[in-house]
Image (cartoon, rainbow over all chains, first blue to last red; front, side, top):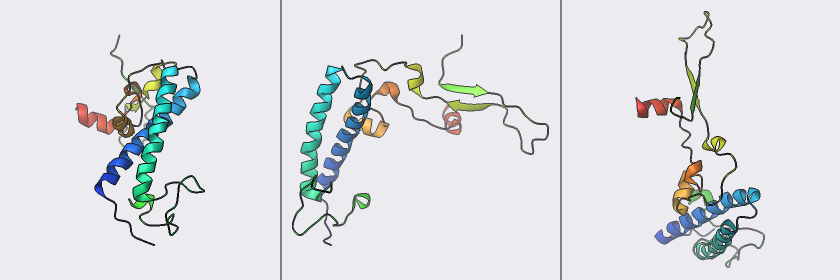
Length: 88
Length: 76
């Protein structure tokens, strides 16, 4: 159980990721009822790409955000390393 | 014609046996989407970071959802 020290830029990246992911949630709900809004679909796809890029950056600092192979693990297995998401 | 407000008011029945001082006017706030109909395309959006803190991507759907006490404090 290594104790990671999170640098300042991590928090900025995480907030960006949270903002992008929130916009994706809202756009998903919107597109459910507006399936032909091409502009929104464009925005959705751009944000989807941004989300993946940001997630990679965040994971390089923090470690895996997702389980079951959706994120890479470091060595040794670092899924359970502190701080846990609600301790950040 | 009154000025439109998302706050709605009603006068509850006051029992003569009410053990507490009666609240003569009750108020509740209603969310903005009720007055929008079907959401139009291309509404103006918040910046991503603002949206995260507002809880919605569109200013037209923002609702602070404050209680009536809060509203009275703000408007006197």
